[in-house]
Structure formats: structure tokens, C-alpha cells
Image 1 (spheres, rainbow, N blue to C red):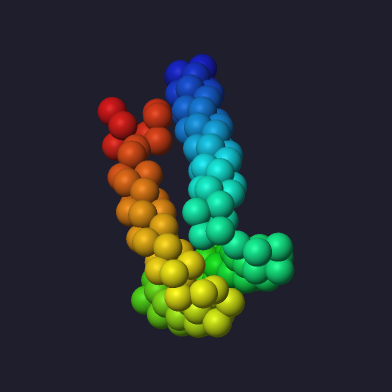
Image 2: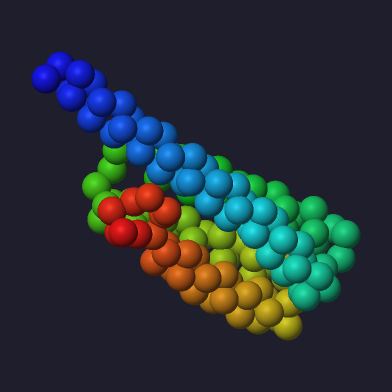
Length: 132
């Protein structure tokens, strides 16, 4: 009986490791996709060297603040409110940085990126209960 429990525990731990490794792979792919989309966005907006440097600073600051909010133990509603406020601040900074045409392109790319992010969240992780 003890061997049965050990076997079940071992199989369960293998499944957990497999799911976690799949999540890490998806995270790495998401990061690569983000870098590629940022490069593409900067090209489409036709940024000057100065704008590109400031754009990178704003995006980096936004990403760090977003990660900080997500890691904290706030309620889901509070996190959503805080992220919305952060997003408004970022949008305001971008609006002052970019020319009107560039800002419109930025907004269009942002909508596209957000819809892709939602689509990515809908895909189940291989080996997860939802994927079976």
C-alpha cells in the first residue's frame, strides 16, 4: 500500500513539473513576442532617436510597476483599479511624447496587442486539466 502512495505521489510530481516547465516555455515565448512586437511598434510609429529612448523608459517603468502590482496580495478588484490607473498614467506620458499620428498608431497597436494577450490567455497549458 505504501508503494502505491509513493507511486501516485511520484506521478503527480512529474505532472506538476511538466506543467510548470510548459508555463515557463509559454512565458519565454510571450517575452520574445513582446520584444518583437515592441520593435515592430517602434518601427511603425517612426520614432526619432530621442523618442525611442524615452519610449523605452516609459515601457520599462510600466512593466516594472505592473509586475509589482501583480505580485502583491491585493484583491483582484484592487489590482484591476491600480492597473487601470497605471495604464492611464502611461497613456498620458505617451501622448505627451508622441506626435498625434504616432500616438494614433500607438493606440491601434495597443488594442491589437491586448487582443492577442487575451487570446493567449484562452489557450490552455499543455498537461493542464483544461487542456485534457
